[in-house]
Image (cartoon, rainbow, N blue to C red; front, top):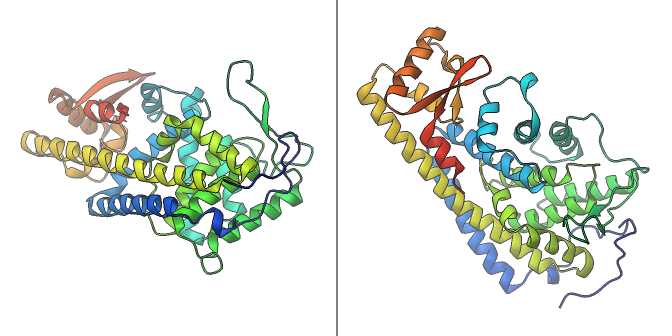
Length: 372
């Protein structure tokens, strides 16, 4: 059983231990078995993604599902229809919770682009991600901000304090510097990347460096670590879906690390999340790829003048506007509308009006993505 130590949830946890935790708390037979299963599933996912002829087509779709799920963990809900319709609007027209989801996806891509350029994960990129998610200009929470984490229940215990993170900019920055050293320095901290991912996710949430948006920022951090360590080439692991289904365990196990130093159960939980969401994503990618190939074959036979690249655009997101089809081959809006109307006659898309604009829904892709 994990060693008990003094902790008061109402006092800032300025003594949050630096990384790494003692090896005896994280390297066990149960952890190693879960680690093997997670790495196997993740390798299969990476291999499948590499074989796809157009990876970008699926990356957009999968990352949008991740964005939707991650915001739902924070009790920010939007219907699939609202979300996908909002993708056809420009940013000035976005409203409601769909806007929050799209901010998350923008933040994810901000992180990926920064990682490609710098190869390191640091405070600067995490602050950029946070600002994108929350659409604010501030950074590390200042000392006067009395941030606490409260119980999410709606019952009698709802709103009670369950955790008070470290307080003070110097303390927070010192904890973050230690975290990023642990993430980036694979010689000094020579652990399996998935072990690092689990430990780093806890540590970031425990530091809780921002006024709000820490959960969403932390989940993007986990995706970036998978890419940085070469476990994935694109942000396609749908990790938040698992957390939604196992939300109580997620928060309870985070708390058990804080209060009882119970790293083992937390790490096994995160490894299980990686394994199961890898298998889920493999299945989803195969379904999308099969649907694309079936659709492409139908269009090639019935509408041979429509190119493969145009069909691929139908699979970047369920709703598409005619102007999205305009390129070197389709040079006019009228031609784009004509092609979409022809595909509607085949039952591939269905037209609907959003504001003053007619957009087209990829019916089967929408149905596929709406299935959990």
